[in-house]
Every structure is written in structure tokens, then in C-alpha cells.
Image (cartoon, rainbow, N blue to C red; front, side):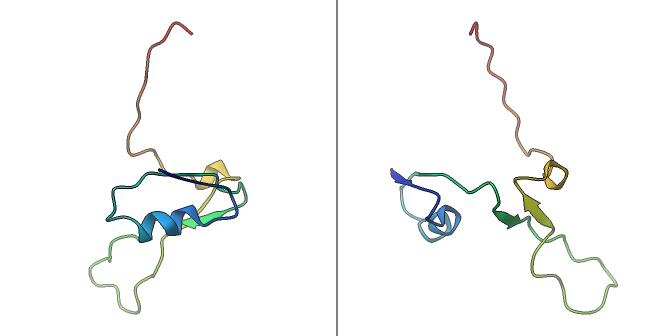
Length: 77
């Protein structure tokens, strides 16, 4: 298990260490801007394809994608 503070690039470490049996836990700054996966290439569209998808900002909920997985745990607390 690797624990880091917000000063480290946790997303980059996760990519670099993706083949190792390690768990990463780290804070990500609230102002961090990430990119979603690029959209699939449309048939018949010419030109250079986009390198990145749309922006994903923690501070702007309207940029958040729909969750891929949703879990619910019933508890008495």
C-alpha cells in the first residue's frame, strides 16, 4: 500500500504502477482538472481525432459523468 499527499501525482503513479500488486491511496486537490476518455471516432468524420475527451473538474458537478457503478450499503448508523 502506498499512501501519498496531494503534492504527489497519484493518477500518474497509478498508471505507472498498474502492473504491480500495489494499492494507492492519495489526496487529489479539489482544483485538479482531469480528462474523460476520448469519444469513439464517428464514421465519415475527417481530420485529426481528439486526443482527450471532455474536462472533468472536481469543483464543477456539471462536468461529472454518470457513475459506471453505484453501490449501496444498508446500515443502522
